[in-house]
Amino acid sequence: MIKIKKRKFLLLPGDGIGPEVVGEVKKIINWFNKNKSLDFEIEEEIVGGASYEKHGTPITDEVFYKALESEAVILGAVGGPKWDDLEFSKKPERALLKLRKELKLFANLRPAICFKQLVDASSLKPDLVSDLDIMFVRELTGGIYFGEPRGIKPIDNGERKGINTHVYTSSEIERVARVAFELARKRNNKVTSCEKSNVMEAGQLWKEEVQLLHEKEFKDVELNHMLADNCAMQLVRNPKQFDVIVTDNLFGDMLSDEAAMLTGSLGLLPSASLGAKDKNGNMRSLYEPVHGSAPDIAGKGIANPIATILSFAMALKYSLDLDKESNMLEKSVQNVLDEGLRTKDILSKGTKEVSTSEIGDAIISKLQ
Ligand code: IPM
Ligand code: MG
Image (cartoon, rainbow, N blue to C red; front, top):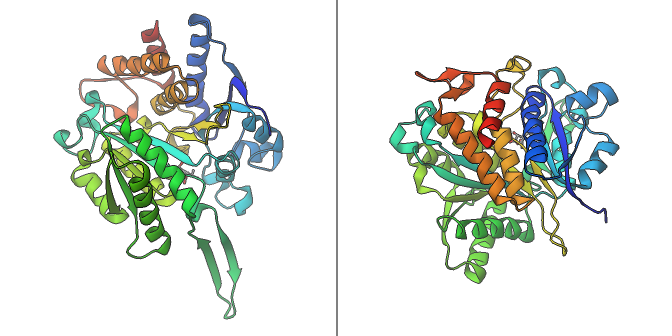
């Protein structure tokens, strides 16, 4: 068993806008080290397309082992059109999927919160989204992302067959549902579990296992089952009906992107991917913005770093138990939005456009 080093952060900026947004988090970590007498040790490595260019692989063993022994990994984003045609095992995304799988980060927390300052940036009417606060718990190490058999195979008539397998076991469902119920208890005590039990056996098992766990341990929490397509519709019809949504890897990927737009911009949504606690209370974790590498705006200094900064705030809370510092950072983000500073993606009438690093600096100045 590899020992986790306390307070060691591994920064993996990755591709596209990754380095720009992680750069702002680096400034914030340095601020905490200087001003709050914290002692975060940071190391930085390349992954994704950047690693492929240098080493011919999306993640080297060396970087992988560093991640394995870090208390928290902060990742920017991976991928881009440049690497679209690579064979599957070399694609930048494989680095991220390997980290999630091998670090056993089965619970992906994606809060979709609509800041009151940004209700106008949402495509939905303000009263539908103001004060929206949904917590997605996406299963992250199972389902169709990892199921076997998989691949592309030639078949008899000169055609090819693409295969992926959607598979879940009882324990995989139970452990992620437990995370959702426990989170709900600290929020509005309501869980919606989404699957396609009307067409998929794995979906039927999902529903049954969540129901069983509810009856065994969480009767005090309100539980609803919802078909995933209905959930997609309900999210734009009446999103405030939800508190915690627990769902599988693929549905979670799609529904959380949809929810992101309710909040105004993908540039605002953080995420935490958590493993199980060992007997010493140590836990592996990876924090990343929900958005991707956005190659179209990379290098222009206009990317929104807030999702990554809020991901770091989640790291302070979930990995380091520094709730006070985490709240302080969230508050600083709010203050900067109050002042009307915006990156391009959330710009609206009466607000001022600033660059990636200007908004980072403004957030730091509010920490003082
Ligand atoms: C996400 C992303 C990833 C996923 C990609 C980059 C592999 O879309 O984190 O939501 O599909 O999980
Ligand atoms: Mg996604």
